Image (tube, rainbow over all chains, first blue to last red; front, side):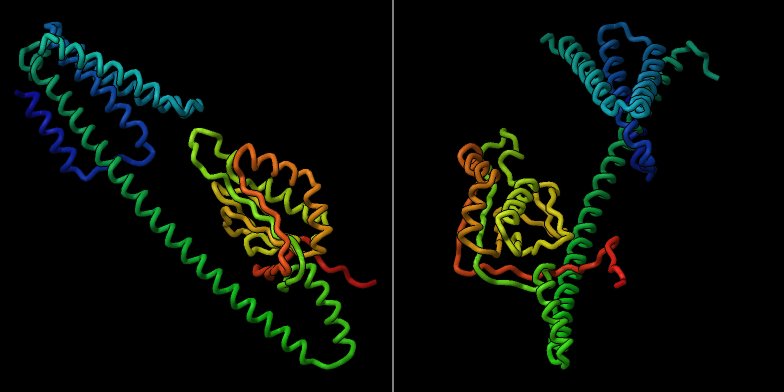
Length: 109
Length: 242
């Protein structure tokens, strides 16, 4: 319940604040969002599997998001412009795996 | 103060994190949205500026040709024998420099891109490139052409033929297929000498292999327009008579 309220509050804040990220940050925010999405789906999966740990969830959420953004930033600095693709692939695969696990638990299929 | 391991903290911390995710997600969506909007409006703006400048250039060029015609008329009406001699000398220089339109016997070489049916094949093999035009033009000069224009762009000493994306730039003007190269000169000798050139042989092969269009015609008169751009040399200068 609290999670749903917080979700809606987050969306509300995002819409209400007319902030858009400075252009120099623009490439890194999507990476952080990908990592965060992965963490949330991972948390959801852990909850269904009964292994949910709030501390792991919070720490992995923050560290994944920051690390993904940092990795892409470091990539552009090192001349590896396609680092974003690596992050997208890794987290994309993980999101699908988490979703598959959730689906197996919920629908037994 | 909430205890670190209290049930309240255990419920609130993940909720805050999920809220943060929602916040980041919406901000990101908004950012991407505005970014794409800005790009679209800028593109229209730039296209407008380009169209405007192209119109300005066309206007200025027509004014330039008017002024040149006026200047020629004034010079022709003027008197002395020495002036006439100078004018005759100037006329021959103008012919070579490309600032007057010419017509006479010559060749017309037509080059066209291959019909692009096969998207998977190498695009540059199926299109006329700048080097193709350069080689054809050089072969024509070599065959004795006196004046050459490509799609109405007169080639002068400062003309460049180069690729720009899918088009070819000649005199900084964008040209696309079909290319018509008009060359004035002794038609029959030019034709035999041009057809014996390497590039003509290559084009006959490419016509079969890639489907490029290649045609050489010998009409009774070939029209070559005047160079419409400005003639300003940045490094060359007139040497003082000693």
